[in-house]
Image (tube, rainbow, N blue to C red; front, side):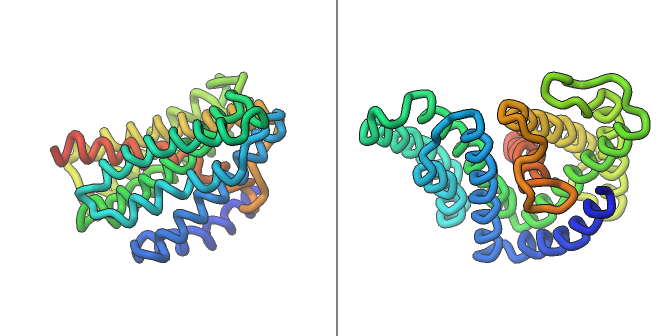
Length: 268
């Protein structure tokens, strides 16, 4: 399993970095692929718990956000996101009327939740990439911090994990893993500060801690969906990791929280 994880990382990381560096149509295509694949995996989980989610509206609404955010100028992107959420809600309610009584209110609500979970959160990859001329460096920083936390938590949990973090959701996540992940992320952040400083020491450490904590939240959110569906992985796309959501669940939370920190604290 560890060999497969390393092999997948060696193949996937250069591709991901290139997509972020390109930052234009190829990057958008990558985000759309990520969004559609994540929605596909999530919909399969929902179907396993007998929730009939309308696929077309879920996929269509999911890709609405990355495309809209990409097409609009940077200064209009927050307004675009707000308008997208409004249209997103209305479309789900209209589908409920058109298809009544085929889909229950609960199933429409789950479709809304799932589309927002993947579609809105992946759009922050584009928001972060276009946040400033340094968007590539900022997004790369978030990726490195996310992977650092994941790596530190994984190996610390294996070696010293004793106290379960949330046994009802994940039987393997431990408090020691969280501490080890945060420690490793802070160490990498300090190294990053020396090699390519982007922020002050305080902001660098604050971001490392916030990213680490929200990576763990993202992992537990996806674990909740998997436990409800009674499966180990969300898919089989990435050898050694499972599905795309299994590998990037933390990134869905780390990028938005980093974006908010940059826009509301650093760039205000």
